[in-house]
Length: 213
Image (tube, rainbow, N blue to C red; front, side):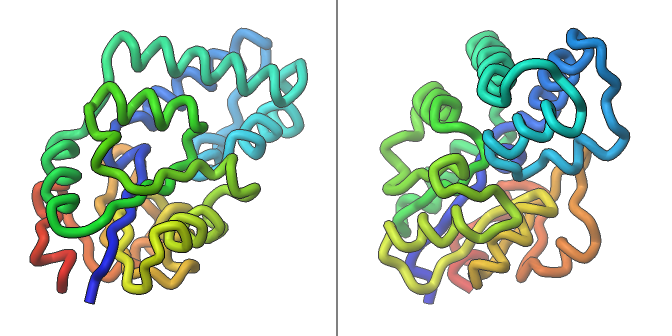
């Protein structure tokens, strides 16, 4: 039986992927570099050290990876302060599942953004454990972030809620049952979606009955 639930953040609770894409593209453009055709998909799920290194080493943005990461994260914080892009049903889904199970969060966002989002959405108290991929040394599709969340929750039967290809692969590699909530603008690849135990179209469909089953 399910004894814990772990949410992804970007693309599941907040519609942040377009903002990440826009802010990163802006940093790349300001450096006079071109945006690679496969960059948007490649960056999804990467930890902060991984995507900042990608921007410097692959795309050619000048400066250290740490400096580039700081510019991007500053841009994201500014966007969140302007308007937090919560997805429909996000708050209700968290509250609904938290009423029955302990919750974890396994996110590719840096700690600074995780805390900012949960605080602004007044959801902090609902999560027993929150982990950033930058805190485990490997981004998704590595299972590292899910493994650490599950370890800290002390759970054995865990359901993950994911949207992206790398997120689905990460949760599956951690041997979790997975509910996919695909993002229409950034749909997961077919082979990744096939890893899900259930596929829904919105967070409203993530009911306690679905998770329990």
